Length: 273
Image 1: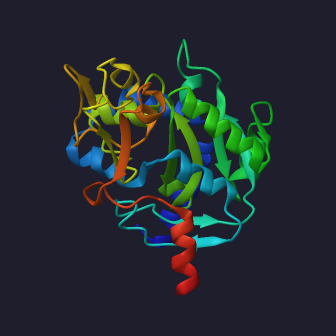
Image 2: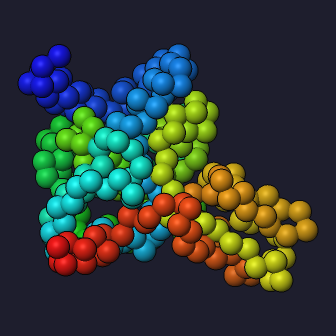
């Protein structure tokens, strides 16, 4: 296949995904992922994946006040494709009805929680989905992120090869509805990259109330005498920290979990270079 043909097919793929996202997700979950082997699942994950964010790093994406054109994020996004981060300040932001929640019979609410960030994605979504999308301010976006975090939902940055091989949306995901989380947990498609943090329990303070176990979207916490964190399963979203009534949960940087997607850090690196 020539490079020009591949580019045309990629643009067409991006259009189909952006225009008929719900139908695209249904096909992947119901027909594609259950019927492909490990190599096929890895192929998809390389081209369509998400990075878990701490609430602080999610807010930074919305409020950053300088341009960040950054490529080759291999250490931050450990996939061989679709890991560019292009952000113009202040970012254009559209809030869009979550296609994952819209595919479910009894979805988590509210539904209008996906943030599409930057051009040309913002104008495309507004043109193709005018009834379920609207442009919002930075302050509104921050309020949305914080409200979703309080509900126990996690912030994720999404990258897709068909969307120009770069970051395009900031989502608030729940284990009940999220297509990427279901693909990872149920079908073994390794789409999730850790935030770079891991939850930590202070056993001297923990009251074994199990609030953290109930809300953990990755089922990484189990409670007996005290809470215990499964290091491998924890993605460092911070939901348990928010919900722990005794402040026994914290989350800490862990180099074994990768490098956070922190646009403030990327901005400093860009200024130095």
